[in-house]
Length: 457
Image (cartoon, rainbow, N blue to C red; front, top):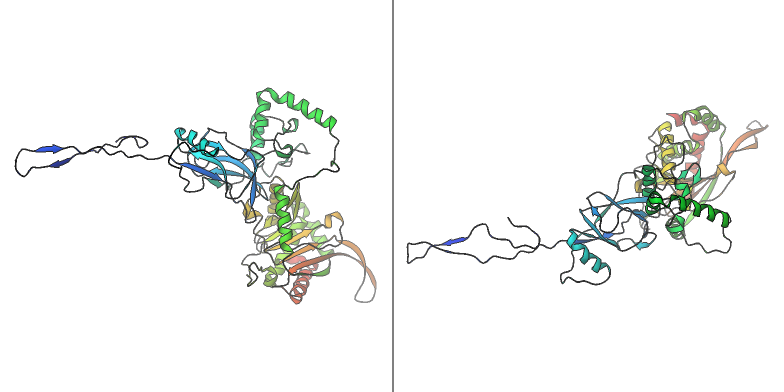
């Protein structure tokens, strides 16, 4: 059989005919048919890495133009509104043309590169990328050429690591996941490099340059920069939003369209504080205790765990997934403790620590931050006694938790006593949740926290 691409296809047999006027056989040979199978040039699209993502930033290209790609191989690292994620290719082929360079921003669904099926098609793909088409037949773009990697990036350190994944020796180092992985493999000190990526981010080519002999130069440049640039914020400068800050901004503006109301409640925390001191050595966190208590209260008040998305109906969510706000460098994210009502407090605490590490390293997967049904925001660790939180779009309520503080109170027998108390304020969607609903929920929550025996079962 002949080759499939740009070659003639010759029939494996001929058509045999017999003359009606003669018994002697004779043959007629069919004219060969020309069958052309065109190689495909596929567009690599900017993927939607979350339900709220409208555009993405190219953090780094893992591959260079002309590189051979295998199906399932990482091609590019994209910064979404919540995390940095590796993007894989659906197909074998060659990275023919990069259309959006590192640091560039592209809308979701737009082409960021072209993938050629064969080396011969690379020139056509580059011509297409530059706006010309030397070939009369347009390349085929049947389907997206990339898929978001579902596994955690290999650059995420093990949970047992003592140094935070996004730092080196306690010093904040901003680098792409692939650059971190490459630096680890090549034993390059990221702290000694000067990043050439957006906002000084270290990308793969910076690590490669250091290995090629530019390490000393980069270290000297870093020292010179540190000596000439004053630390802190440059007053008067205009700083554009990061992708995450832009997403937070859009969500907050969207929240203004929802009619909300707020209800506050003071809860005694003596029993909860005592329980925390007792089991803290076993790895239990106060965040996990609050999430567990909230989830158990939501079991009895499902309307507070509901959500209204279209303005015409609402959904009683089947799972109780507690999202907890976490401040990270350059934004805010809400990792989710899924099925918090069913998971024991020890497993919940371990999961929370894992989520926080991944959040600060920008390695959360979409299902780990966009599946919350109720949100907690805790500023108590900063000594804040009370505050109000803005309702995240698509959820029914968010609870702001203040600090637990010793307070002089009157006892039931008329005496003066001292108790630790905290104030919580719940902001809720008034289209679905009413004042009585929140009042009853908060009463249940207070009873669980003030008698927390159910939290350890």
